[in-house]
Length: 275
Length: 295
Image 1 (cartoon, each protein chain N blue to C red):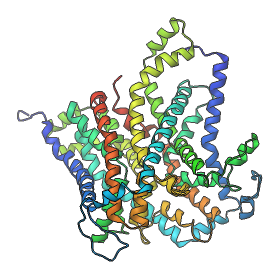
Image 2 (cartoon, chains in turn green, yellow):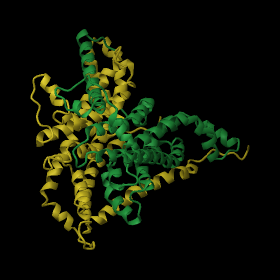
Image 3 (tube, rainbow over the protein chains, first blue to last red):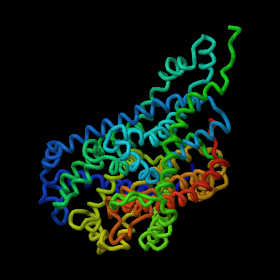
Image 4 (spheres, rainbow over the protein chains, first blue to last red):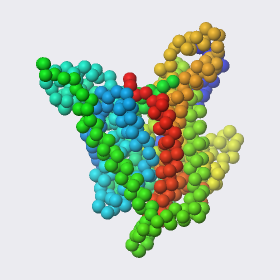
C-alpha cells in the first residue's frame, strides 16, 4: 500500500466516522423514540436524556394481533427456509460438480429469477390464490417465497460447498455409496456452516418481505412488517408503538446479520467477474 | 471394484432439475397469466363479469396522465440512487480497504441497513422527516439551515426517497466493492509505489480500473432492484404528495389493490416487465461475456 499523507489519512477518518454515524443515527433515533413517553417524543429541541419507559414494548406484547403476527412471521420464515432447502441442497450438490457453460447458465438463471422485482408476480398470484382459496394461508406465502429463498440459498451455499473436494464423491462411489448417500452422509455434514448461513440469509428475506405479505394476508397470517403499518391507523399514528414494533422486528435480523456477515456477500462475489 | 465408473455429469441432472422446474413454473406461469389478465376487463370493483377486451387496457394507458408521470419517476429512482450508491460505496470501500486502526467497527455497522426490513427503514426515515418528531430538520437547523417540509413538497419528497434509498443500499455496494478490492494483486500497488505514485494516484489508476467489472455488475444488480422499489415509497410518502413519488410498479399496485382494476393493473405490469427486459437484455450479454463461475 502507498504511503498516505497525514491529510489524506485524516480525511479518511473524518469521512469514515461521519458515514458510520449517518448509518447509526437513524437506528439510534428509532430506539430512543421507542423508549420515550408521548410527551418526551414531541419535545423540541429533541431530548437525548430522558426517563426511559417500556410502556410501548409492554403495550405491544399485550396486543394479541402483534403476538399473532410474531408467530406468523416465525412460522412463515422458518417454513420458507425449510421448503427452499429441500430443493436448494440437491441443486447445489449438482452445481458444484458442473463446470463451464452448464454451471454458469444454471447459476445465472437462478440469479436472474431472484433479481426480478416481486411486483411482476404479485397480481397473478393474488388472482390465482383468491380462486383456489390460498389467500391468507401460511403455505400460500411460503410457496411464493420459494422464488426468492431458493436462489438466495443456492448462491450462498455454492462457494462453501465448492470447497469440498470432489474426490470425496469418487471415493464414495468406489466404496459403493449411492449419490444420495454421498450427499447426505458424507458431504452435508461438511457444509453445515454453509447450510446455517444460507438458511439465515433466506430467513432474513422472508422475515423482512413486505409486498406479498401485504397482499396475500388478511387477518389469520398477517406478518410483522404488515402489522406495523396497521399501527398507522385512523386514530393518528401511535409513534411509540410503531417505534417499539420496529425495534422488535429488526433486532433478530440484525443479530443474525452480525453472526453471518462473512457469508452474506460471498454468494455474489464467488462468481468472480473477469477483469 | 472393477465395475466402478466415474459419475457422469448426467447423473446429477435429477438433483438440479427439480429446482429449475419449480422456479420456472413459479415465475413463468404468473407472467403468462398477467399477459392474459391484461386483455381482460377483470375488476373487483365492478359487478360485471370479466370479458376479453383485447388491447383496450393498453390503449387507455396512453391517455392516463398518472401512468405517464410514473415513468420518469421510476427512471429518477433508478438513476439518482444507484449513481449515488456506487460513488459513495466506492469511497466507503476504499476507506475500509485501508484497514485504518480503530475503524473496524464500520464493517459491522454496514451490516445493519442490509438486514433491517425495508419497511422499518422506511418507517424510521418517515419519523426522521416528520417535523417535531424527527431530527433531520433539527440537525439542519443546528448548522443554520432551514429544512424544507420534506414529505408535503413534491420535489423534496422525491429527494427524501432518494436519501432513504442511498442510506439503505450503499452498505451492500460498499461491502461488494471491498470484497473485490481485497482480491486485487499487491504487485500492482507495489509497482505504483516504486514509480513514485501517491496514494491518491494509486486509488485512481490501480483500484478504480480493476474495480470496473465489479462496478458494472453491481450497478446492474442495483438497477434491477431499484426498478422494484416499493416498501420505502409505500411507507415514507405513499406515492404522494399528489402521486409525485409514484413509480410505475407503485401505480400498478394502486390500480390493482386500491382501485381493484386488475385487468388495467396487469397492463401496467406488462409495460413494467418490458422496462425490466430493457435492463435484462444488456445485463445477460454482459454477464455471459464476463461472468466466470469456475473457482
